[in-house]
Image (cartoon, rainbow, N blue to C red):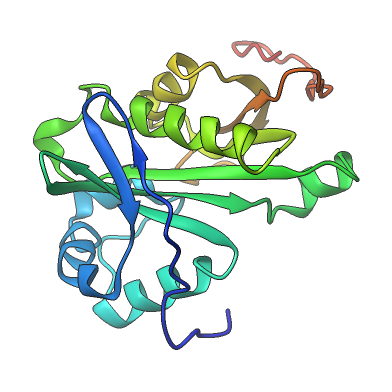
Length: 205
């Protein structure tokens, strides 16, 4: 990952019934660092076992992602409660399967734990999807690599109209036994879902 000196900022603001998604700024590092140093938040937001990121690591991650994504701070009544981004698809396994289509992905974290499970993530996903389809004319938007240990994230995408695209078994000994990809397509676009062989005790579609 090549470091970027600053966030690539944008001027897009999205307003929902309860929340506002406003551009992430260089002045947001304190709150981002707090969330990224909370082991419980990171347990659900990260694919690997990460207990904390340093401020320098946080800055490197968000500055890098901002070069190919619109990154937002999620605010409730003017206070930050989480962050999210709408990014050009960067996973070769999906790009190879759907050449010629404009694919995006959503990543999201609600950093304020007392607000978990109250639908703020679902609202943010809906706002990002509407922007992707109506303003950027994306063909499909994905939620990628959602671990089986994070059912709350799966429900948020399902409530926002996403359907299961793939369920991928992981090697034994890792944090997740299964990782899920979800997708929502623009009207008129259809993607073939991946199907895996069924094994005893597990069903996929």
